[in-house]
Length: 167
Image 1 (tube, one colour):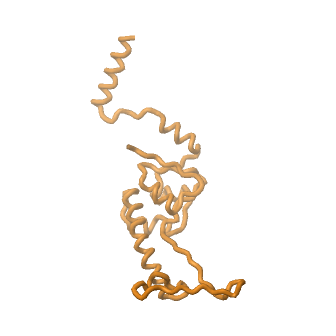
Image 2 (cartoon, one colour):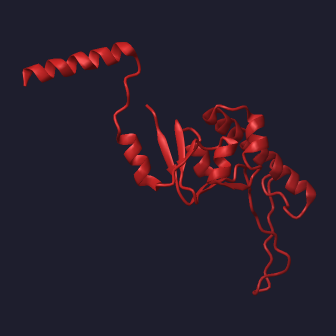
Image 3 (cartoon, one colour):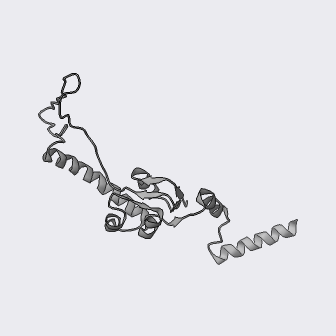
């Protein structure tokens, strides 16, 4: 079934990931679209806390990557390797949903940043900018669709004539 998504405000990151699978993405002119990528945050204790305590993590011998030290280049590289794997799936899903190559997503879809609705439309991230908002989208979608084929149109006309005669 055709699915239309209407984006207002922010349609970013996981929200855009989900929306990218819709048949049509429509956005309010003031919407921000994108933030495609994966991020992970952590904290590093620089000094003892107010009680004079400092957290120390010890991991088992066979799990050295369980709690990497985010303050080191090596620790950040381990985390980046993990989130790059997640990002591959993210980019692939968006590309499939938008029917473009992954290279287009990487190059044109904001590189982790966001785009205005108009910019997102120009990049192919969305299909339409709807100035009338959600009400306009609902009105457009509620109009009966035209018959897909001449045969169906003929059958619909014939049925309408039969109904008219029986009244």
